[in-house]
Amino acid sequence: MLIKKELAAKMIEQVGNEFAASSQYLAIAIYFEKEAFGNTSKFFYKQAEEEKEHAMKLLKYVVETGGDAPIPAIPAPKAVIKSAEDAFVTSLNWEMEVTGQINGLMDLAKQQNDYLAQKFLDWFVEEQLEEVTTMEKFLLIVRKLGEKNIYMLESIIAHAE
Ligand SMILES: [Fe+2]
Ligand SMILES: [Fe+2]
Image (cartoon, rainbow, N blue to C red; front, side):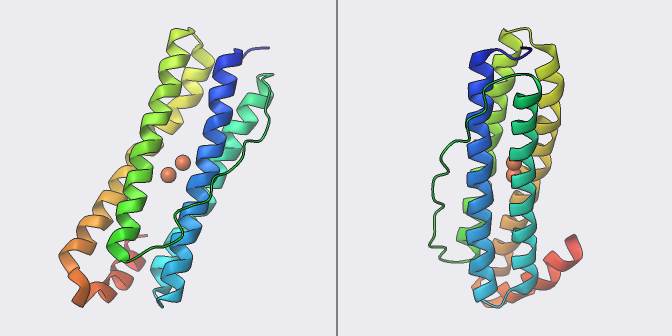
């Protein structure tokens, strides 16, 4: 097999983390839907889909390279979202955490001189730049709007996509 046991195990752990991120974004999408923020809700449903795709991408890589791929348990997301600001803080924290996890995978791939894995992981490294900057940008906007003007987020997010 092309992939080493330790890297396969770490990648499978990341499959769980990506599914967990997907669940968290679903919980946030539901929060916004209930608050009648249709566009913001749509944005988070889309994020949830993307995280699922990340999980599948990792899973397929492990399987294709001959590693063991037991599907891990997915922890429940933070269910109570208190505000739009809370939603974006939660999202940004998630993306920062995932960035660290991806860097950890890359570190291991480098230690093992696994060039194929490094090439594969490059996509995730770049993806995190986009994910973190997007959440940072929207958190800044939410804070600028404040509670009184928060509904303007709906038109901003609709035009940002
Ligand atoms: Fe992701
Ligand atoms: Fe993400």
